[in-house]
Length: 163
Image 1 (cartoon, helix red, strand yellow):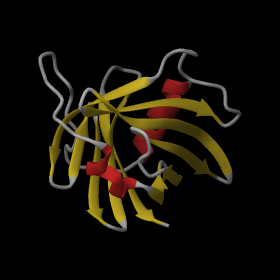
Image 2: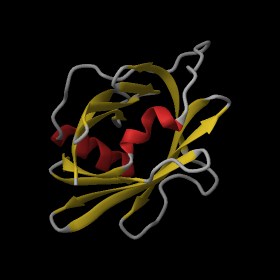
Image 3: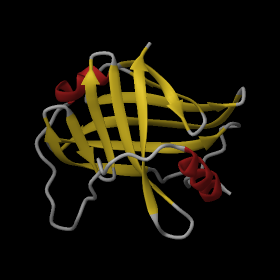
């Protein structure tokens, strides 16, 4: 059911040029701290999957930035994500969990989805199949590789504006 929902949602979203990279065996994460990405803190909103996507990021504190995400479609919550960016061993890792509208978790209780930092460019932070791009102080893109039921994947871009 969840894979079907993600597949349906990804087919409804516009696809962009390749902006994500995958972590491969032997890669090393670059040095980074939350100070490098503190500009992400704030309330962001945009259109995605035929609805409204919203993210709220806290400022860095004690080695983490927490966030919440929700997708609103036809006046209802489709799903949530909760997670954080954390500093570990001199680099950054993005971890998250998905929840249905009723807060039933998609991942097992002790599991989460983890995105390792791969590289940093001037305005882009490349995590494993997930890129955060700063367009300006008021606009960002998040590029995410979304898996399909048939084993393929598509890159989906979320364009957000600061609220």
